[in-house]
Image (cartoon, rainbow, N blue to C red):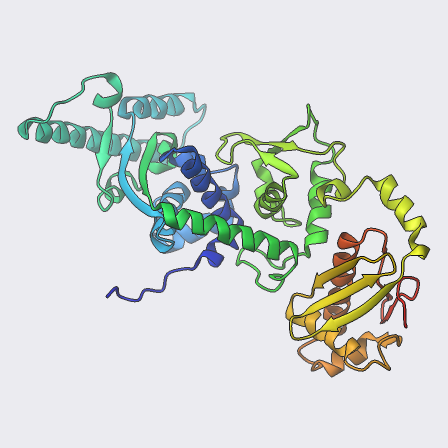
Length: 423
């Protein structure tokens, strides 16, 4: 029986954009039959250089650099989620790495004592690796193994999983493109992971995780606001035959979680990320041009929506709410039925309160009164207003002709009789 360990669950990794990115890179490799990766594929832009991470590395002294931290996190993800095992970790080109360090040192126009110490340490590490490389060759010869003496093979240093750290912990800062690892994938777990991500990004879109903020964010915006911020971020980027180049600096944006946004849009077939592990930027194909918030939501063109809204007086809905399954059923006078899943605890409770007494359903509700009915201290007016706003958005996505099922003001909410049939 395995010892119970406090492993992070899939949700904990998926909920973090940078870890979700690593999972996408691994998934992409799995589906493409690629099980060999280099460390630099997992290091995007300046995300790993931010002060908070650098300070954490300095304080704990557990890692030699941000790159070293990334490598350990990949290994941890594979272990926690049982996605596979590391077969080997290698430094692919010791001579190429040496040349890189020498060039970098020579290119420095000014140096100080700290620079001298840094490059001295790098050359010492390289010297130790050269000794190790020769020792490994000698051991193979002693065992009678056939050696390949091509340039690639002779310059490579292989480590076992538990031995790599003491050899490349500090030099990983400069050697990420030369650090290669091979994974023995657990096929079943990767299919499970794909389903976990599918479920997560849909629930993320439904705002179910609004309170489950990852540590690196002060707060999480509602999906509609994140999508709006994402659109504002990309709207001035050049669009070439439907493709937009999105820089990795998007990872540091606070107004939206770019990996989750791209993941959701990709799984809804509205975009296609060419390669999650691209080294310079993400090349993203948008399936509908021009790019608008409506196109990102999968809605009709703005003109079509506005035309539908002009005809909205023809639409009347009969509403019923089932608290047992947390579903609002809207039946239109055009013999259509829509089922809106009411998700998120506050949203469920707000709708339950409004619909629990048929006499009060069509009243002008004070947000304060609803908050008081839900506990007051635990749920405030802002939370109630957000819940109703998000429900309005869900209805609008399902029924574009309906602008707002609830009329919402700063302090009150009321079902919009323009769309609602009271009979």
